[in-house]
Amino acid sequence: MTSTSEPQVTSETLAAGGTGPSEPQPTGTGKEFDLGRLLAERGGERYELHSRHLNHQLPRMLHTIGFDKVYERAEGAYFWDADGNDYLDMLAGFGVMGLGRHHPVVRKALHDVLDASLADLTRFDCQPLPGLLAEQLLAHSPYLDRVFFGNSGTEAVETALKFARYATGKPRVLYCAHAFHGLTTGSLSVNGETGFRDGFAPLLPDTAVPLGDLDALERELRRGDVAALIVEPIQGKGVHETPPGYLRAAQELLHRHKALLIADEVQTGLGRTGAFYAHQHEEGVEPDLVCVAKALSGGYVPVGATLGKDWIFKKVYSSMDRVLVHSASFGSNAQAMAAGLAVLAVMRDERIVENARATGELLKSRLAALVDQYELLSDVRGRGLMIGIEFGRPKSLKLRSRWAMLQAARKGLFAQMVVVPLLQKHRILTQVSGDHLEVIKLIPPLTVGEKEVDRFVAAFTDVMDEAHGGGGLIWDFGKTLVKQAVANR
Figure 1 (cartoon, rainbow, N blue to C red):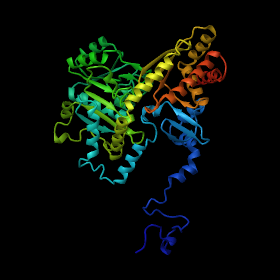
Figure 2 (cartoon, rainbow, N blue to C red):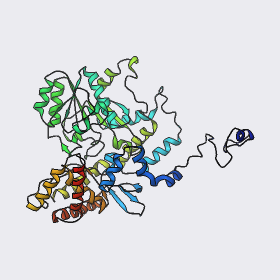
Figure 3 (spheres, helix red, strand yellow):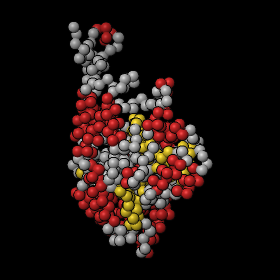
């Protein structure tokens, strides 16, 4: 018998125009593919490849603000470049890296599930991992009963919108101004940022209400066609928390009008705010549907989950004829379920929620103490390790004139001016909390501690000193941003 581990060359093959040993043909073994070699040979083309084949504006933006770094590896809350310099990650991949990068427990779980060669995604059986992960998620919210697994936060929101409409028989979902719930068509319909919505109409007939305005909520509910209100307990854009008592009162209003409360915990859930779910900071709040994703992935396998009450699921899946009325091709896949189970195990064993609460309180208090010291710094807010740093109009004439120059060019430029030296000078990755906002949002891995707090506060203080001194690279870069903003009009 001839081995199939190497390509066989015959006279017939060569006569037909085949190749000899110097150009091996596919054998089905996968030995031709070498990921390490591919990255070594072509990794240096990363920005060129994106410019040519993907979103061409991304590399352009990164080059403009000096974020076009080349990171070689990552672990925990840090990246390293080719020269061995470390970078502190205060962004966590927009919250995906709740446990930091490459947590060993999650890595092992993924190796284990791959090595197990499970009969995954047959579509016509019931594998144990989805049931086990659902059981553990629901243990953190005993007022919910069932889970649907999809592949992302926006899918979790889409599921909640569909389930709410079907369960109530009503068409309209309310959302809060400045909300962000995703970018697919359904979730975009409840996105409170016009910049994301422009040009994609018509969307679903949903309606925005001001965050915290119970009177506006009740006015809409009186029309009798509202299926639900979807709300982030803390809005990612701007880091605005719902007012005390709002969620409980909104829940009572909604139920009185036979509508549902949907809590979007895609970013705020799984310990981010110092509680397992952010809505749990307010006593008596028991949403009808809860959306989670991001950190549940362990930073490896995309996953989203929609948790809901039993009666809602039973209404949607009301008969065997409707068994696949809502499904996802890759939903409940073994790799995602294994990652989710490992994440929850780490959260329990390493007391991740408690660490987020304690470290968040330390970071917030250290930053809040600077508000009286710097006139450009107007507010520090948030919960746990979801913190917003807001800048505002200064009092002194010299700084006020520079602030006015930036605002005239484009609102949000000062915050960007702070983000850039934090990376360039101090090797700390942060983000502006939304377009046209003078707010930086800190959402680091939930594993950070006092060492990372010290590093960030020292760097932030240095940048603020430079900004208030009126000179240096920060204002030179501000001029560059102004020119870029004017050119883009």
